[in-house]
Length: 384
Image (cartoon, rainbow, N blue to C red; front, top):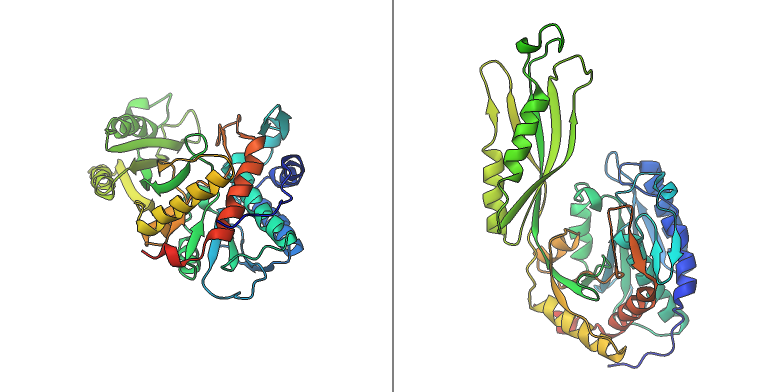
């Protein structure tokens, strides 16, 4: 294990830099907001000496960034730090969840998922460069714009870019305290549409058939399909336009998650079997949306985790590992067999809520873990 020199990774100073990122709100569907965040990240990467390429985003979504740091072997297969800069929080969330520190906790929209971990990972690279420490493999970065909606527009980019590298590091939030992720469940999204028959809700209620009522019954039935092997939930519903009209249409989105691909496939079949069109034109339609394949850890990933354990030990810490129910772009790289270590981001809680926070001490801890990994990875030990 190569002893590292003292690295400039002061948590308080990193927190000030992270504040700029958190206060640049970037919800997935707000193209201008995401692009402002990408511009901010591009400036920071360029200031660190990276060559930065801006990639036009998918239709209706923001741009992406590809960056490479100086290295004698630049352009060869190396280490890819992969992250997303979109969040689930709409612009204006800062009014309800302002960036603030309370003891060892710091709050803000997207601070845990996953701006904090991404910022810490890049600070690890910066500190190594400033200390004159050269990694054995070249380091590149891919920052994407649509992970929070399942990466429908960037999956091909992710897989193509990852295939150019030997190792993928993903600074998504830590699990189980200080743990990292070595696998992720399979996830499928579904688009639901109920079709009713309109009528005046006051004068001729019985002549209509409410799409909202249809959807309400289907939601209960769908969520009741949840078992120990496969879960079902409905998280988005839109229906109706006028309260005095029996609704004609109602749309919703559902999510299914399973530890094994065969269980997700079984769940998908059950969902698609709900399609029904009646003679009067009313009915219910289910279409399959974005799917994240199951990622089960292969030998390369587990050797990567073993190396992370060694690095953590030199830092006086211990880490654990496991599979996570939450999806990430690590699903894609892990599923195609690339050595991938996920969950390298910060420790915290409440992500996707108005209580999202990080522990400030994890900024320093996880940045040093990332720095140690970047130095120790040769690529040779990762072969699967």
